[in-house]
Length: 181
Image 1 (cartoon, helix red, strand yellow):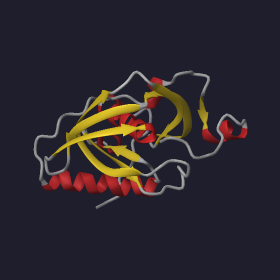
Image 2: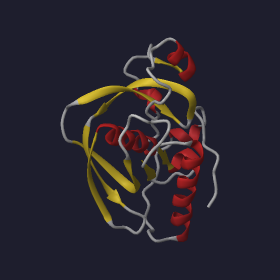
Image 3: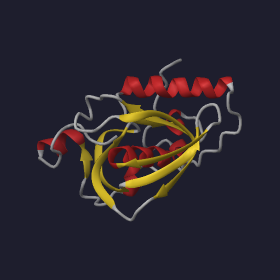
Image 4: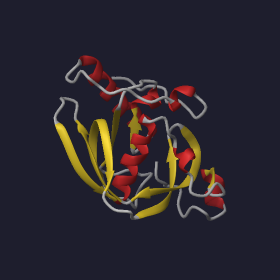
């Protein structure tokens, strides 16, 4: 287990499409998952995708019971999601401030589906099929975007609602420092 460096906006590896995981129950996959959880915890994040630590595989992790950065959000189940697929369950969407561990210190307004189903596999290759709403759905969509080489900055709903967290807070555009990550 180790804390890995998180790639930042501008690193071309963040724009690459990740490849499917083929070997489940492999020591390399177990190490990757442990590194993702350690790195996410050290950065106080809500989720992390393998490409963010330079591994081009379709693996994301997310979840927390209680997170000081998201005091108004309900817990999100700790999840390992491999080779995910996302299916919107309605046309309903909402705008919310997002940030990213790969774009530190900044936030932007992003539109996301509010009600989704996600499928994929856990670390042992067992199927997952989960319905998610609200913040949980937003986190899943954000992390899975990384697998397709997409950062939230490419999904801004209004380019004028993008900036440094501190300035957005001081100008009262952000109600609190805790924002969607």
